[in-house]
Image 1 (cartoon, rainbow, N blue to C red):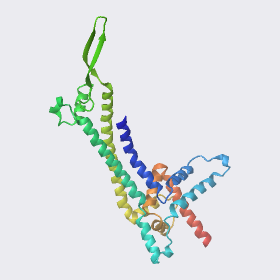
Image 2 (cartoon, rainbow, N blue to C red; image 1 turned 45 degrees about the vertical axis):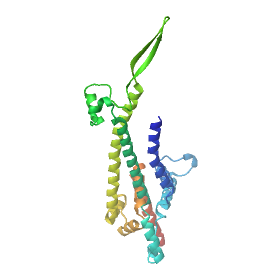
Image 3 (cartoon, rainbow, N blue to C red; image 1 turned 45 degrees about the horizontal axis):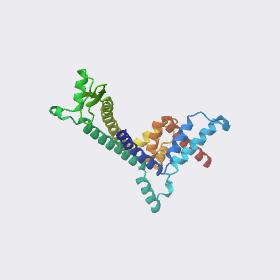
Image 4 (tube, helix red, strand yellow; image 1 turned 135 degrees about the vertical axis):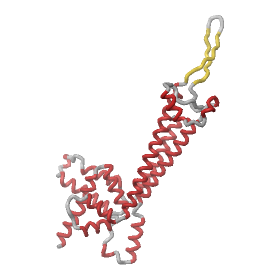
Length: 291
């Protein structure tokens, strides 16, 4: 149990690192997720608020927390101070993406170390079986399963047999016997480690695929045409192309794109549609009032 507990702690450390990163970011990610979930949850009728009003309140909260932090007025970009701030902000707008990839790499490194340690534990053979030491234990495991042998792998870390001393007391004398015993707990633990070995290898491939997927997203996100298509794809109503282009240049940085992906995966794609629709409708109403 101590070894299993240590392995569990090793898996929990990357999660702590990610939570630490979220805590020190400019965005209240937990508040954004909670507010987005409220958009699609049943309203609390005890508060006696109109559902449409509650929805507008949540969208207003999301609007202020998602777009106010990275807003740069177009009219003030010509000044030197503003250009420096704009460059600094664009440079650090990939905060979530960097720490997300670091967290994935930590998970990947942890999985690699765990697989290596399990291979050392299960892959070690007894001296009796030194002739098959070069054979991988998974191939031996598969061969034994096909042949109908109930025991899995003969390892020195999990011995399945040992010698036990028994004493039988009788009236005249005591009789001492040494017999061969089976250790069922070692058999169970070994089966658990074989399962974990295969499962961790599968997780390594899944994590690698996720990292590669995000690298492709990064390459595509560099192109402004991709960012424009991404926004247009999540808009129900037609809007001014110039207004969409302005939104992409002012608000759609790496962090905003990552948060949109986070909302799409954890809540719904319609959340991004509603947030963008609310933003453009707000801008449209503001221009109407100004005119």
